[in-house]
Every structure is written in structure tokens, then in C-alpha cells.
Length: 104
Image (cartoon, rainbow, N blue to C red; front, side, top):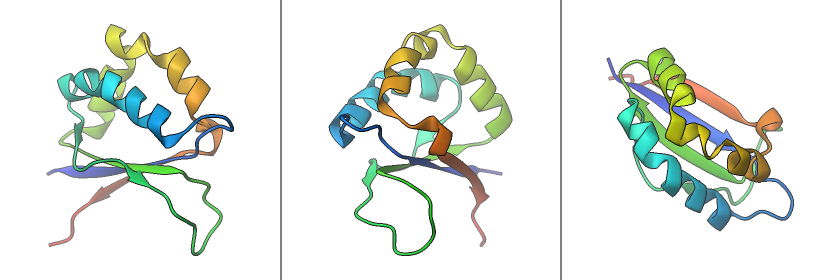
């Protein structure tokens, strides 16, 4: 079964979607090596029509094993080398990762 993750990210004041995109370009090899594949380009949020989720950027990823992929990625030295940059760009306290499957 393939799982789809929606990575919903608010960006900190003073940072931009371009900063976020550059960060994801840097960590993409580590993500892919550990089982997370980007499904599409990053989506820039244009507004929130309902609800209170803060977001500037939405990424969509696929994986066969979300728990293992996230754990391995977090332990990957290349990914870890970009954590300071990640934390400077994203408001992770208000971010969400939603795990889904496709209904056929």
C-alpha cells in the first residue's frame, strides 16, 4: 500500500517560499534515499478558506512505510546537517503532517 503525506508548513516571519523550496531541494536526496518521494512541486498557499491551520507551503510525498521512512530520514546525517536551516525557516510548532491513503 502506498501512503500519501501532506506536509503543511507555516513559514517564519522574514523567510520566504523560495527559502523553503531551496531547503527542500537540499534535503530531497536524503528524503528519497529513505523512502519519501515528492509527488509534485511544492504548493504555495494563497489563502485559508476554512479552518485555523496556518500554512504557506504544502508538500505532498508518497511512501510505502511512513513510520520507517520518517525515522530513517530523521537519522540520516545529510538530513541532520540541514536541521538548523529547517528550524530557521519553518514554524514547526504549527506545522502538520497528514497521513492518508487513496480511496479507489
